[in-house]
Image (cartoon, rainbow, N blue to C red; front, side, top):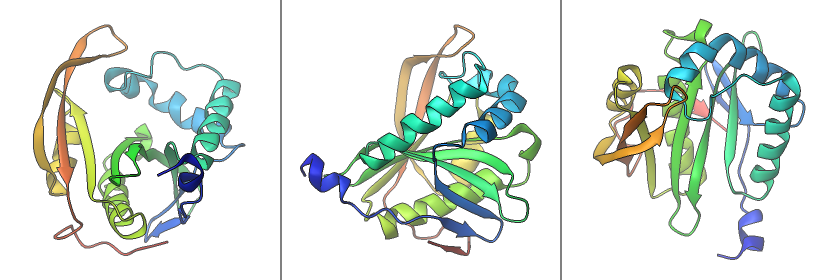
Amino acid sequence: MSDSDITKIHIPFPIYTDRLMLRNVMPGDGAAMFEAKAESMKKLYRWMPWAKELGTVEDSEKVAAENHEKFLRREDIMILRFARDSDRLVLSTGLHRMNWDLRIFEVGYWVRTSETGKGYATESTNALIRYAFNALAATKVSICHASGNDASERIIRKLGFEKEGVFKKDARLPDGSVTDHHWYARFDDKNLPHLNVTW
């Protein structure tokens, strides 16, 4: 598939569940992203290789603008998820490292600290699995967690992913430690927990 063909792929947004509205990141989202990141930095620093420093609102706005450009080129889809009853940014997620020829997508996410424990990660990942297979004709959806990240592992198993393997010592966390990543995949959207989702 040529680059020009890829940029013409229709990617419908927003995505709605009963509690969440999901859409691609846009210029102007930097302030909301920074606020959520600042609140969650301690947790992000523990697990996310990219979370080495907080930066500024301007840095977050630059990330928003750059990722919107990647979306337009269909290179990456950073997705922000807002609570439908408050328009509060509750988590950041996305479809990453996609292979448009094979229609393979990787899901990643992090939840704002004050919004953890409410089932948002499970709900939004459930929605993205359905979206990938039905709106984007996915053949495979992948997800991973770092060794020791038991909360993410529970969500992955709850959503019926099959374990494919472990990449040993493949990433350095912000504290300098090296971690393994456990990789999982789904090949359809069958037998997911019930969820109302539209786009």
